[in-house]
Image 1 (cartoon, rainbow, N blue to C red):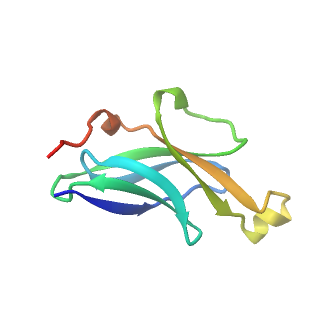
Image 2 (cartoon, rainbow, N blue to C red; image 1 turned 60 degrees about the vertical axis):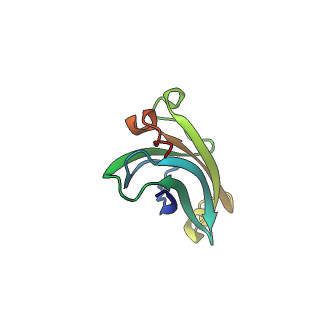
Length: 113
């Protein structure tokens, strides 16, 4: 039986990161958004399936992509408030991040049961 799970994301202060998340095999990544200021990913999962690691690239707007994003699937964009330190260094008050799925797992779509 499938259900939707939420997974917190951890973007880096440098504006780019590879985030690895354990989730059931074959999970369909649905969207990203900030929930009460916390960036999260939602996925349709079958909890009975074994867990695998999904690698997500999180890239801040204006930052150089260190990985080839053309080979990855765009999941979505989220907004995060800047910290007090960010504001002191001249960064905008809201930071914008973009999430891409770069896992081999994206080639394995969930079974239609």
